[in-house]
Image (tube, rainbow, N blue to C red; front, side, top):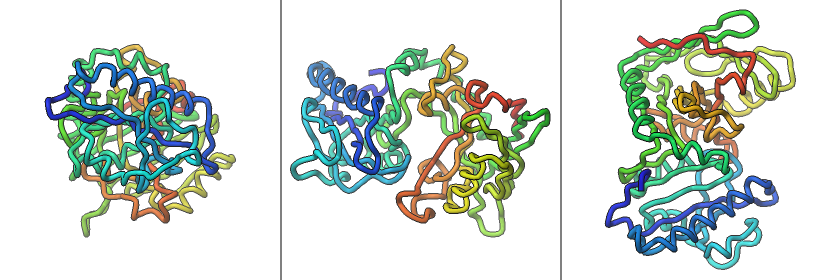
Length: 351
C-alpha cells in the first residue's frame, strides 16, 4: 500500500524471478530469493480481495547473464509451489514477455541479475509500475521500514540541487593525495528515487533512497562532454585509478591484477567506459549500514556507475552501443568506508 498505493484498475500483479542455468549456476542467496518470491505470491493471493487484486502470480524467466541486459523473449507463469529451480526444468509453452508486461499493472522483480534498466524502459511503453529488487535478502528488511516521507523529502532536495547545477566537483582522498573528478551535468535532469512507485509508467529500486543524474555524454554535435579527472577505486582490496576524459574512462592506472582485469574489460567493451550515473544515497542517515549488496549499499552514499544509461532521463548509451547482448552492463561503484577503506570522499560541490 505504501509503495504502490494500488488503484481500482490495478487487478493483476506478478512477481518476476530469473532462473539459474548451466552458464549461471545457482547459489544459496538466489535460491532463498526464489523462496521469498513464492512466499510473497502466496501471501498476496491470500489477501487479494482485501487489496483489490484478481490474481497475483509468479513469472519466471531464464537469466540474461548480465546486470541490466535486455529481458528474454519468453517467460513462464507458474503457481508459487511449482516454481522451477533452474531454467532447464521449465516445462510447457511460455508467454511472450511483452504480452505478460502488457497485462500486469504492478510488478516486483526479485531477481539475481538486475532488471532495472529494461523494466524502466518497458514501463513507459506498457504503463505498469515495477519495484526492482536485484540481490534482495532478509538483511534489507530494515530498509523497507524507514520513514519513507522523510526519505522522499531528502531525495527531492538533492534533485533540486542537481537540477540547478551545470557541474559537480567530487574530491577524493587516497594514498595521502586528493583527486578531483569533474562531472558535466549540462542538458540533464536528476531523478529522486525515494521508493514511492505510484505513477503508471514508472519503475525503480526497492529498497530505495537516492537521487541520481546521468552526466552529459557528449551526444550533441560540436559539444563534447566536460567530464574529466581522476577517480580512485578500490575493488577486492586493491586500489587503482581511472583517468576520465569526455565522460569516458581512457586509462586505468595500477599494476595489480584487479586493475589489469578492469583495463581489459574497458578495452573489450568500449560502452562500459561511459560514466552512466552520479548517485547520492541518503539511507546511511537513517542508521543503515552496507551489507555487500548493491541494491542497498548504493542507497547509503555517493556512487558512480559505468556502462548503460538509456534507462535514466537523458542517457544515450543503450544495448546497441555494446558489442553483444551478453556484455550490456550498468554497474555501480559505491564510495563508503566499509567498502573502499582506502578511498575517502572529501567533498562534493555543484555550480
